Image (tube, rainbow, N blue to C red):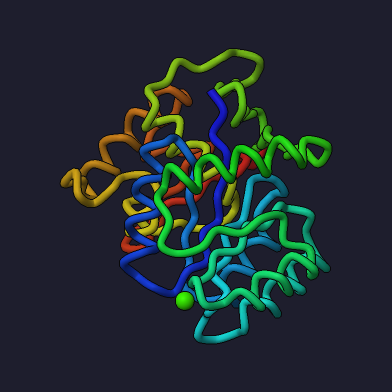
Length: 230
Ligand code: CA
């Protein structure tokens, strides 16, 4: 199963959260931010691939400037979203290299269709979909994790947790971030839920919290994945 990465840059909290939740249900790997600057730093830090959905009216940087900067640095397809009365913006966005646009309000199903179309057209710039951390490789397309040549059996949430940590390898990821990215708060997940999944993951990886190899908990902060020292 392919989990296409979608970066949503949208300052309207209601739209951002609603869209993120709907896209996650459609099995997209969603990263949502409210500011243009955060979108740019995420696009620069993340492995290439996926799609960016960019709101043109942002509080910190004009969406068209964000688009220009994205076009200068990454070749991830960009779908701009805009309010109906922003026609001139849309034309300028397309001229600046946007791959498509959606007019607000739009449904998640509509966006899903546009994302698929954009990905089909940009098939040539296909994403890097395998992440490596030490002896661990995580294939986002095939939805498999292999440790030292052995495929790990994993539940979907465990896979998403591992894949998310691997995409941000070396960085401590907070439990709040994991709750936002992997669990929809609506389903009543808590930090305890994450702890339980981490302990399952540790077992799959053949390690314990007391003697970590890949998964390192940082008390009060979160967890990071890193290659074992030796
Ligand atoms: Ca806006």
